[in-house]
Length: 145
View 1 (cartoon, rainbow, N blue to C red):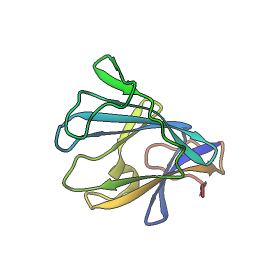
View 2 (view 1 turned 135 degrees about the vertical axis):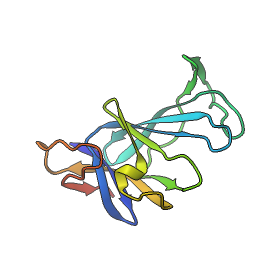
View 3 (view 1 turned 60 degrees about the vertical axis):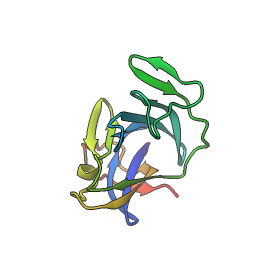
View 4 (view 1 turned 90 degrees about the horizontal axis):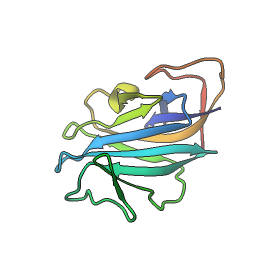
């Protein structure tokens, strides 16, 4: 079974037992919520759809966006990604990582506190299929390359 691995400086900090997850954040200038939905396809991450509440500087909805329940929603035309890089900063709101109807701040998952840093998000394989991990719990995994 696939999982989502969160790595800091190449070290596994946490894994999420999910095939799909969201990365959500609040834009630092516009204070508008942004949300991206990813799914695992083999060893790659596929950005399935994105949505934003409103628009503004750097927050323009993508081509073909539709307004649904107050969110501009669209399907970005991006190839599958080997990894997603998220930068933590003490000067902006944290990312939320959401799966199975649950969201957790990224710094809580990777244990970096308020320090700045880069988190690599990758698909990985779970070795222990019977074990269920909660937020922030690393299970036996092998990061995808």
